[in-house]
Length: 434
Image (cartoon, rainbow, N blue to C red):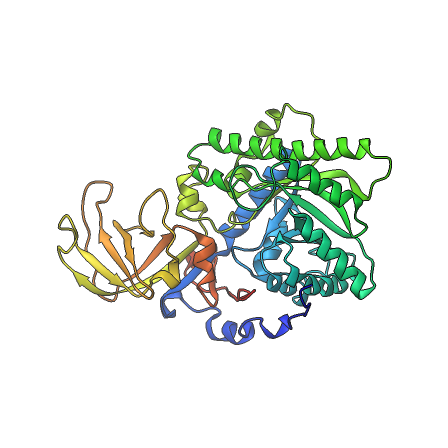
């Protein structure tokens, strides 16, 4: 048995928001030292509202993934929008979960349902138990993902050791063909896992959780809808097998009804809606739940799916040109050096090529090192090339918002309805750590 300890997560939570706000609130972006991540709050909020509407039109509840922005302010916008309300979240780290609690989001009722979004690790059980004790007095629940019988064994051992004998609410993580986490519903391992869960006093099957990571390769609504349909079919098959097993047993353990069929990625979530609902020809063996995380911020990769447009991208990185190299490109193009590299953008590329595109200028972020990047000259819509002077500040949309955000200690918040989006209206400090 792995020794169980808990981490003092309140000691790991970020720099002072008050000090940052005092320093920057009401000032122009022009004073900001680069590289800097800027988020347009209005665009972010509109993206959140649109996702609520899509879930509602699709006939599903919505669960917001917090991993992209990892902030209190962003979480509130994800859960309460002009398009609807929800109170369920997914977190990718325990620090995110504790930040939700420590920032009052559970106490004030904004968050009532926290899913730890990885199959439960042995060394995380004690922390999750403490988290559960913190949220339950407020009427909230902590849920887990499982995809292996040993995870159930370790939960049972922990409950026996601490003499709590509680039941944990779990989703079975299903494998839909992406070779990430999860177990295939059609495999013998799935039925063995279901039998183990039904026989255990330590767990209650809440539902089935799928994620079509391969949907990021979509380039049309039709393709994204096909991935969404595949997600639903996979979790629905899992529910059907489980219900058949329940009916075959005279005595079963804990489970809830109806099962929750939780599916989604940002591309498939953008495909959800009334039209997609009409395509669900199979009988559902539970209640649909839609989950997504990247959608409030978005990025070049999401643009490549064609399911969003450039004005919906709420984030960009400001960088400063610090040197210039005429004609140095492989085809004689000019190149420029900027003070933002892999730490500011990650090294994720995408179908559109390179690491980012400069907003409003015919330049792309073509090569990247840890703390600097190389811009390469391209042609604008009329075939013209532009130059960049040293000291020019450029704004760049990168390939993957989740990893871009991870590199920045705080975000400068603007609002396109205030001073044309050039005035800092807030500073968000993300939750850093695991």
